[in-house]
Length: 405
Ligand SMILES: *[C@@H]1O[C@H](CO)[C@@H](O)[C@H](O)[C@H]1NC(C)=O
Ligand SMILES: *[C@@H]1O[C@H](CO)[C@@H](O)[C@H](O)[C@H]1NC(C)=O
Ligand SMILES: *[C@@H]1O[C@H](CO)[C@@H](O)[C@H](O)[C@H]1NC(C)=O
Ligand SMILES: *[C@@H]1O[C@H](CO)[C@@H](O)[C@H](O)[C@H]1NC(C)=O
Ligand SMILES: *[C@@H]1O[C@H](CO)[C@@H](O)[C@H](O)[C@H]1NC(C)=O
Ligand SMILES: *[C@@H]1O[C@H](CO)[C@@H](O)[C@H](O)[C@H]1NC(C)=O
Ligand SMILES: *[C@@H]1O[C@H](CO)[C@@H](O)[C@H](O)[C@H]1NC(C)=O
Image 1 (tube, rainbow, N blue to C red):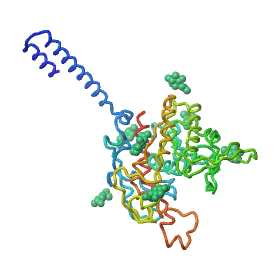
Image 2 (cartoon, rainbow, N blue to C red; image 1 turned 90 degrees about the vertical axis):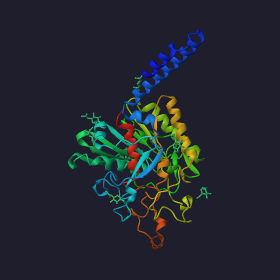
Image 3 (cartoon, protein in one colour; image 1 turned 135 degrees about the vertical axis):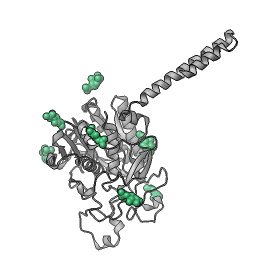
Image 4 (cartoon, protein in one colour; image 1 turned 135 degrees about the horizontal axis):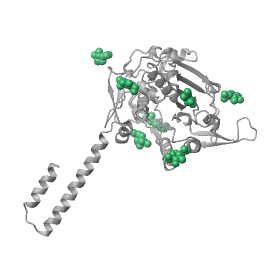
């Protein structure tokens, strides 16, 4: 109040004309208004809750900071349900700095991941990841992150729905963390969770209930779908698989992606109780298959990369902005209908991480040929991510949104 007192003293010290009084009263009003708004601002800042954090700070705009004190958040060998597709250290990777990076948003710090607090939040609840192998990687990461807080006898893993649904359970909490395989979200001929590498991809772009019935009543849903749509044309089937009356038509990439996501968003609008269920959509995960894009040699890829890309706002060829805009448009439309799906905008932060992929350090499902062995970059995986690694940060971002709600 000191400032206002000064203003009052100043008032009586000057000529008491009507005009100056008006001017002074106006000044007083303005000063009071500023005080009031400042008070309101301070009251907001005093609430250290996550929703406040996420409304004030763009968590996705930031930089990677080397931090080998706190990272990795778990050890690869201690993760019971680790996938051989992602266990880079186990498969011979020697440079391990990719495990030591913390994501630092420009305007704030991410809350520290607390496994016990997350499991408390998930008590009697289902957290379900739905999507492709990148989403599966994030699911594995999430289990690795919480596992240390669950004694061995109180955790389990089982598979159901013909292998499409994998369920990790923390018994003490009656909490599950699940993954459902649906790489295009809608029905397709790639829905088999084991053998889905079919040469000709066909999608039933209007059909989702076969998958959705497994996750509609979940408490937290995390979707993704991008890479499987990335081809110039997709075969769309109207009708059902195996039905001779089905009608097929080729539809261009961006268009068919939007058709698929509209089917998904309609399902979410009409079948998911958005009062109960928290919804997330993970943006496209970048690939590093062409070293030329970041100034490397022609014909090379992420193989042998041990450093990040330092160019600010580096954006690779594989991340197609039009496809991201489709997601943004679909989520915006849902918002106008009262349904909030939070995008986990991980594309930019992962673009920098060309050294975070398994490369050749993963299980090879097929024996390697002489030719491949002589040219390792020819079989390097520059799509998925080593664990511990980049997807742990996606889960820290997810944690920031769900932990204090
Ligand atoms: C972290 O990295 C620094 C520099 O590379 C090294 O000197 C230090 O021993 C490392 N600390 C840990 C805990 O690994
Ligand atoms: C983690 O969360 C639990 C449960 O909320 C709390 O008791 C514990 O103190 C937290 N740990 C840290 C390191 O903050
Ligand atoms: C356990 O969690 C499920 C949801 O995953 C819920 O339907 C069930 O009621 C819970 N059981 C108890 C005993 O609370
Ligand atoms: C497994 O697949 C068969 C044949 O496609 C189907 O009839 C059955 O309902 C499926 N089971 C589950 C649990 O989804
Ligand atoms: C969600 O909550 C709002 C406000 O409390 C209520 O009007 C609406 O009926 C609820 N919707 C559902 C599906 O429960
Ligand atoms: C990016 O992709 C386009 C078309 O897909 C291609 O013509 C171009 O050469 C690529 N650029 C780089 C740097 O790889
Ligand atoms: C996601 O991040 C990209 C790049 O940082 C940005 O251009 C885009 O607007 C963001 N999208 C949303 C929905 O926040």
